[in-house]
Length: 88
Image (cartoon, rainbow, N blue to C red; front, top):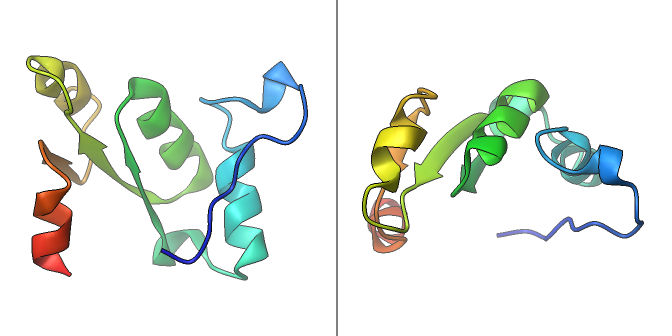
């Protein structure tokens, strides 16, 4: 992980599913959307990643969450962060 982008102002319109924070993180790193990805545990995470043009890995961190997340067609779905670590 190279950095974290978080909300620094009280602008509700910048929150997910808007891709504002993702675009800011990409810009800070001079990265192209196609070279980045998001791991997210919500439908709005998937929507924001799509709007930013990045890949998304859905994190089903609670039982039953995988069905809702999978319906938004993420590139991958994981149930544990250990799955990400195993691929590194």
